[in-house]
Length: 112
Ligand SMILES: CC(C)(COP(=O)(O)OP(=O)(O)OC[C@H]1O[C@@H](n2cnc3c(N)ncnc32)[C@H](O)[C@@H]1OP(=O)(O)O)[C@@H](O)C(=O)NCCC(=O)NCCS
Image (tube, rainbow, N blue to C red; front, side, top):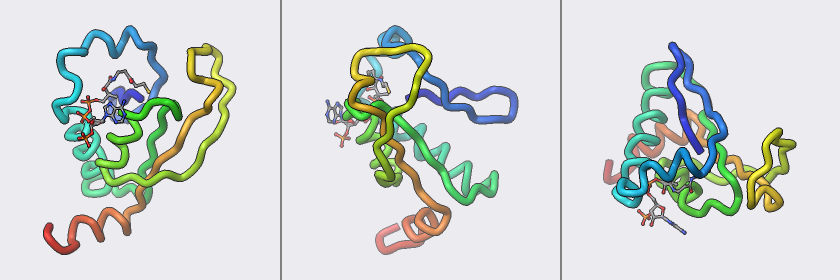
C-alpha cells in the first residue's frame, strides 16, 4: 500500500518491497495509522468524499491492520492482473472501505 500526493490528486500506486525497506526503523510506531486517519479525515472533512477505499495484498497483515485501525472495513478479496508480479500475488488483493456515514458515526459516537 502506498499513497502518493501528485498535484491536487491522491493516487494509490503499487510499489516494491525496496520502497518500504528504506523505512524499516519507522515501522510499528503508528505512523501509517496516523497518516491514514488524517487522509480519511481530509477526504470526508475537506474534499467532500462519499466513500474512501484502500487496497493491499491479501498476505500483508500489517497493511490490513492499518486499514482497520483507520476505520475501514473489509469489502472483498480480488485477483488483479498486475503488469509486474511479486511474491504473494497468488493470494490476491483486498479492498477495504469506509463511507461518509460510517465516518460521521465514528466521529460523533460515544467516547469521541
Ligand atoms: C505496512 C506498513 C506500511 C505499516 O506501517 P507502520 O507505520 O508500521 O504501521 P502502524 O505502526 O501504524 O500499525 C501497524 C499495525 O500492524 C500490526 N502488525 C504489524 N505486523 C503484523 C503482522 N505480521 N500481522 C498482524 N499485524 C501486524 C501492528 O501490530 C500494528 O497494529 P497494532 O497497533 O494493533 O498493534 C509498514 O509496516 C511496512 O512498510 N511494512 C513492510 C512492507 C510492507 O508490508 N508493505 C506493504 C505492501 S502492500
